[in-house]
Length: 171
Image 1: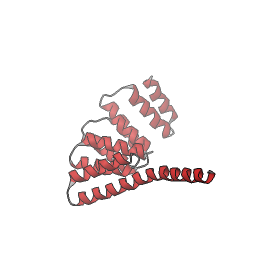
Image 2 (image 1 turned 180 degrees about the vertical axis):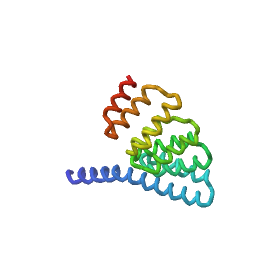
Image 3 (image 1 turned 60 degrees about the horizontal axis):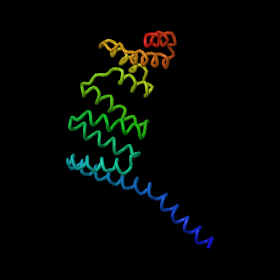
Image 4 (image 1 turned 30 degrees about the vertical axis):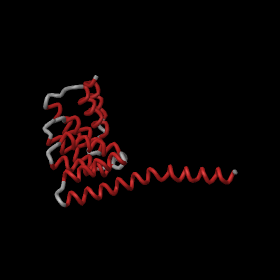
């Protein structure tokens, strides 16, 4: 009887362990189909495959990245931004997604220098982060969040005095 229970437990454990792997493999196959459809200029079909892959395996960042590229081609920047944010949530080191996100914010004409500064700060590109934080201030956004971002960027650049000044203005 003990042998039967052990065997039953092993079957259940192996089934449960294989389900996530199966979802991941199915998501990869859907992305491959999407890439093939995209090469044939079937962008709507490709987008469907990418969205299905993202739904099948939400942690598979590649699906979001490809979907974002399709949305960019269609000039649907708000949708592309949402896909890129999901991609970065699934893999916060995806440099292509972060770079595309910056481009989409600029193309969307929804200028938010603070968002761009935060993205560049995340990438440890403090020169561009400082530039965009200053542009946000120049465009009239004198909110605490921009001064806080400016303080963080100065701090990351090793400019403690400037950081403290920005943090004071944020308060």
